[in-house]
Image 1: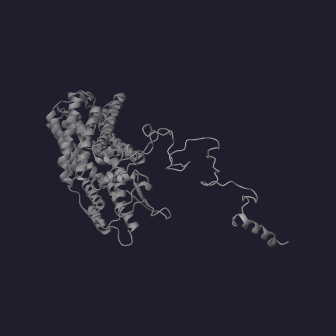
Image 2: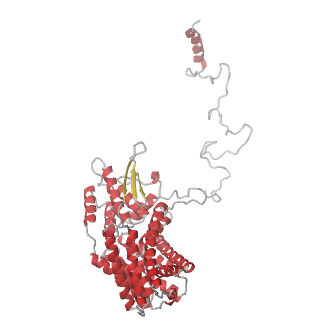
Image 3: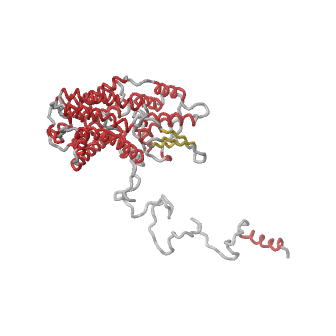
Amino acid sequence: MSEAEDRKPQSDEARSGFDPEITSEFAIPAGLAVPRTGGEPETTSEFAVPSGLDVGSPAAAEGEGSAFSVPSTYSARQAPVAFTPAEGVPVVSLIKDLPWQDRMRTMLRMPVADRPAPEPGPKAEEGGPAVPRVLDLTLRIGELLLAGGEGAEDVEAAMFAVCRSYGLDRCEPNVTFTLLSISYQPSLVEDPVTASRTVRRRGTDYTRLAAVFRLVDDLSDPESHLSLEEAYRRLAEMRRNRHPYPTWVLTSASGLLAGAASVLVGGDLVVFVAAALGAMLGDRLAWLCAGRGLPEFYQFLVAAMPPAAIGIALTLANVEVKASAVITGGLFALLPGRALVAGVQDGLTGFYITAAARLLEVMYFFVGIVAGVLVMLYVGVQLGAHLNPDAALGITKRPLWQIGASMLLSLTFAVLLQQERSTVLAVTLNGGVAWSVYGAMHYAGEISPVASTAVAAGVVGLFGQLLSRYRFASALPYTTAAIGPLLPGSATYFGLLAIAQNEVDAGLVSITKAAALAMAIAIGVNLGSEISRLFLRIGSAEKRRAAKRTRGF
C-alpha cells in the first residue's frame, strides 16, 4: 500500500470526531473521552488550585484566578508603601519662562529615552535642520563659553539648548578642559553624527560671555525664530568686537586693585601708591612677555617680581612703611581666583577630568607667583632687608576704610575681567557685602578666618546667582570679582617669606592656610549658588535630579 493510501483512512477517521488540522503528536487518541467544562478550557497551569481545596471566591467582577483581582487579605488602609506613588510618577516640569540653564541642566541629567521631545517650531528649515551646521554652531558657542571660564556643566547645558532649539533632541554634548564634542543620533537604527572642537586660547572677557548667553537665550525662546544664518552672524559680531576697556584702563585697574588690597591689610597712602606702582609695572612686563609668546607661567613669574622688589627697596631705604602690605597688594592682582572657583565647581558637579585640569592650571600659576616672589625675597634677605613675618598679626581694624577698599578692589577686578558696565555696580556692592560679612565674623565675632571666608563666599554666590537669574545671564560676572577681597594674599606672602628665611615649617603652615582659604572661597561660592536654587521653582529635588555617586558599590 502506498503512503497516500495509508494516510487516507486516517484522515477520514479524523473527520469523524476531531479537527482535521490537528497533526501534532499531542493530539488526543480516538476513543479517549475527555470531560468538557462549560467555563474555562482545560487548566494546565502550575498555579491552578488543586481539586478538593475550597478557596473563597473573590467578587464576581473579575474572573477566578485573574492576575488583576484584589487578594482577600488586602486592606487599603494598611497597604504597604508602593514604589510608584498613588498620584503617579512625577513629571519633570520645564516651564518656558524659567532660565534655559535650569531647563537644559534638568534634561541633561535625565536618560535620553526619558527626555521630553522638543515641540516642532518654525525654526526648523524646510526638509529638517542642517545637522552638520547646527553641530558646528553649537561647538563654536561652547568654545566661547569654555574659553571665557564658564563651568563645564553650564557649557554642556548651553550646547544642549542650541541643539534642542533646532529640533535635535537626541544629542549628547561632552566637555573637558580643552576638548568639546557632541554626538547626534537621529534614531536608534541610524548612524550617529559626531563633531568636536579644541579650545586653543583662553581669554577673560565677560562682556563676550554675556553676549553668548543672550544668544543662547534667544535661541531657546520659541518666539524669537532665529535662523542659522542669523545665529552665525551674531556669533561673528561677538568675535570681531573689541574689548570694552582699553589697555591703559586695564593697567590702571591693576594698580588700583593692588593699592586697595594693601589698604585691606593695614597699609597707608604711601603703601597704596607703592603697591599700585609695583602692580602696574608687573602688568606691563607680563604684557611684554605675552607679546613675545612666552607661556603664562613665565608671565605670572615676571609679574610677581616688581611688587616684591618695591617692598624690599622701601625696607632697604629705611622708609617707615609696611613692606609686607606692598607685596601682599601686588599678589592680590595675580592670584587666579577665577580659575580656582571654576575648578572646584566642576569637581563638585561631577566633571572630575575638567576639575583636575583646572586645578592643575591653578597650581602652575601659583608656582609661577611663588617663584617670582621667592627670587626677590631671597635677594632682599641677602642684601640685609629686615622683613618680619610677625607683621601679619598687626593688621589694623579699620572697618570703614576696609569696606571702601574692598569695594574698590571688586570694582577694579570687574574692569580687569572685561565686564559690562551695567554689572559693575552690582558686583561692587556684592564685594562690599562679602567683606562686611567676613569682618563681622572674623574681627568682631573672633571666628576662624576659614569659616568666615566660607560664609562670606557663600553670600557672594547666593547674591550672584539671584542677580544672574533676575537678568537671565551668567553668574560669573556677579561672583568672580566679588570674591577678590577674600583671596588669601597675606597668607601666601607670609608663607613665602618664612620659606625664604629658612623657616620651612612656619612657611608650610601659612601656605596650607592659604590653600584652605582658597578652597573655602570656591566651595562657599558653589554652595551659595546651590542654596539659591532651593528658593526657585525649578530648583527642587524633583525637578533638578542629581546623579547618584558611588559609595563603594
